[in-house]
Image (cartoon, rainbow, N blue to C red; front, side, top):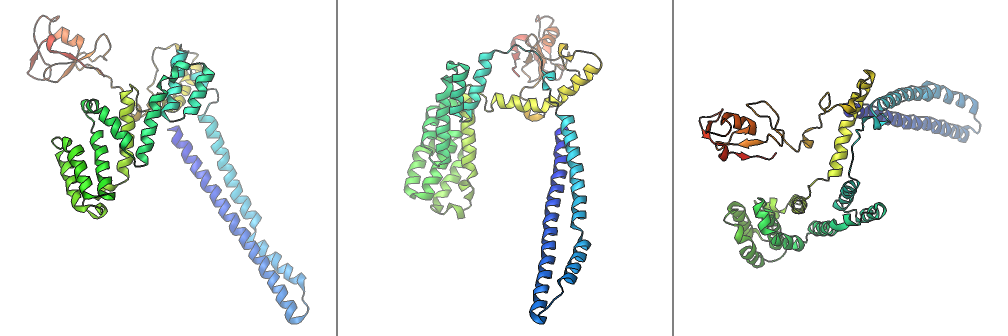
Length: 385
């Protein structure tokens, strides 16, 4: 990838610069040492004989400095560095076209939605002053409606990082049913951290009382975790030296803070990652390919912006694969809103059109193409990718 090539060239230039700097310092030290030695020799000769011939000593010093040839050495290293810098600049000019507007497709954006996305990005990352300023300058007062929610989120996260779990426990208690419906054990993890803190810093009896009132309801589903926590009671005040020392790891706090933000954003109907951040990162990766497509199509006197799809794929990496694409195994066609994927009782998935064809326009049961099971159109359930 071009970015990797730029990174490698930069590393080579940086190494040459460090080598030049190191060698320059060595030569300066060496020249300084020779001068000091000549100076000491002159002073010693003058104190013992009362007279000295400084000219001959300076000639010897000059001879030694000529043998070291510091200027010649530095010139060679500087030439190598300059060559590397020149190559690096050429690669930057080649990879980063200053006129990125060539890769821009004309799209009618809703300005209000874009402004809301920007404001949400600032609030999501705790930059409330910048978000407020943007709202004022963009005249988007309605975008501030979500500010209070993100303020609450950051206050709770900050409390977690300061080892204060009360705000998070209060929030998780209110959202307990929703968390369970979404398969989250966040509430248990918060109580687990609180229990370990009490056991380590307070008394065993207080920790036992907390376990009976707060942890016991989770025991039927999370018995293994519950048993380990109960065993920690034998190591009150010295869990660090117990078989359960992992409960004291600081990483638990950071992971709980991350999961809390994830669940909080999900409850708000927001994605965990900032849409603006993801869009910019994806654009940075895809821009070089789009610019190359534009240059190739321009050379062929073709307008690629009018094409309905790109002539080559743009690989953005797995971190940007948010939505799967369904290809019907029977018709070999990509799913769409009109032809969505449908799951039949046996668990296999076909497109709606293929099910209609197999069932003779929904008039009879049909056999699954991949197993002996039979199904009807009414038993098929639409899947959402």
